[in-house]
Image 1: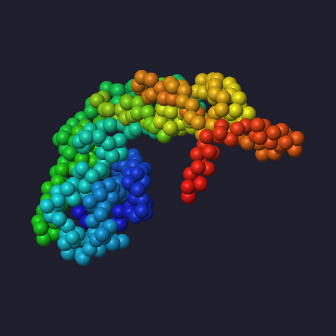
Image 2: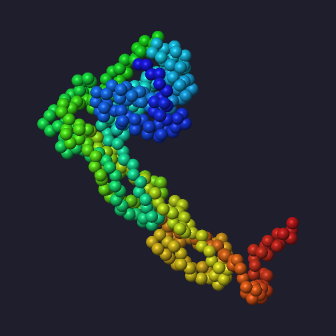
Image 3: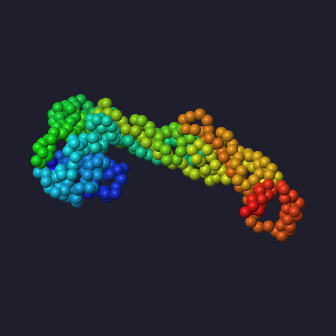
Length: 387
């Protein structure tokens, strides 16, 4: 097999692309050029093989590193031209040669099965539906208390007319003659002067299922699934945080075949900020400004809470920076017992502008307070005097 393309160019990504960007590009192209979508189209089949090989290189860190280090715009053939098929193996560790070609031709590094959502062995990967990702916006209160919300999305459901087989009612699903029902075939690859290597790859004729459809189902065009709009009620647990993902098993795309495994529904949670409360884990934090008269005399102040408001008592002679902790008034712990705390930090605010008459009254008040009652200021002055 001769592969002279630049894998980055094959997938349409830059060398700085992340693993997720590379996978996303591959999945998009693989669905576009898959043989099932383009029956009899040799150009689409060639393109599908090209992008599968490219992804096999770039999805494996070791192979990607080797290509980035030794490759050129013309691929591995630009490493010196020593191999009979455009490959030069001078820079490779031959102890890992099976892993290298396994990633090239559909082994452990990705390939055909990745279209269907991943999984274990090759046959499992080819018979599993895609995961579906949706976002769910919640208010601060909904995230803290829990809520049921409906999300709307499109997915492939198993075709009822053919029970997911893809075959028209009354017609047989035959064993694949190309792989004899194994779902995989042996592929021989020339290693130039090192001889030949035999590698097992997924069968492209039956998409690694081991079955061939004699007559396609008219309802699903042989895919075994039809696309539908779904309104799904999500039970959001109390205490969920912004950025967390709910993984709902079996609610993604259906897979082809009677025994196929459906993918999962991944619900990404986005939580709106509260205008006053700040969440850290399961505790809530509040900066509470009070007047200097409230700080001196004490007061009862209404503050925000998860379910509305609550009252807090400010003791007389409260200092700025004092912390008042309300136990159990925070966020319920996710799938656990108990709740966090509501932590209130007092900030004594001084008026920005005062009338002259008020200033005179404050001066009289200040003169009436003994200096010994300012403990912190006296301590500061004592230490200053010792410098």
